[in-house]
Image (cartoon, rainbow, N blue to C red; front, top):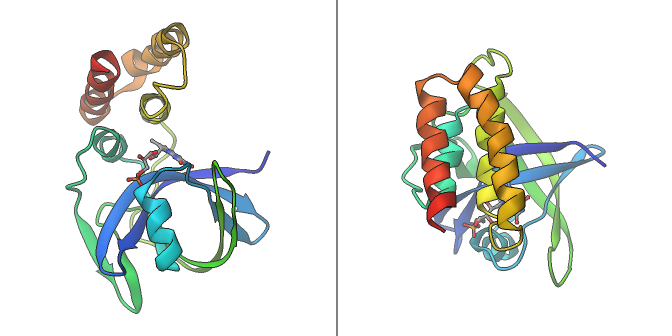
Length: 183
Ligand SMILES: Cc1cc2nc3c(=O)[nH]c(=O)nc-3n(C[C@H](O)[C@H](O)[C@H](O)COP(=O)(O)O)c2cc1C
């Protein structure tokens, strides 16, 4: 299996209004692949906008907000690139779609990495942040997974929250858990 970079992808709706969504970018040699399941707004946008931006962040609240329907996250424009980045990004990559592999379930958009820029230092891995990320992904798959599987995963992930979370990680965890418990 190739390495997957979990990030926030900015596409443009009808080539103007920015749209952000958490997605995993699949490494494929020098290129990266965006593979959105149908249906998705990002997928629709990718057919008309071939310049997209991936923002890399270690802020779990951004992922928690996005999976719970709050897309009001500050963005910053980029010089000479149409899709803005997250204001809070540690780094961003400017990606150009160069090929599309059609699929009924999950088309793949092959992207050339045009530029990567760093904005803030990365201060190390954190188990609670990783746990929020896992729970956020689970919360987007509630209809595809059994309740038993979800409950087992949450019980395990909570260990990292209890041992290593700061206030932002706890807030993010509560947001995601509320979604899981109320769906
Ligand atoms: C960390 C993370 C990674 C994700 N990766 C993908 C992915 O690679 N493909 C996908 O279809 N959905 C992925 N999802 C779920 C999408 O974010 C979700 O389907 C979302 O609704 C798509 O957004 P859109 O319809 O607004 O474009 C991921 C979610 C999270 C939290």
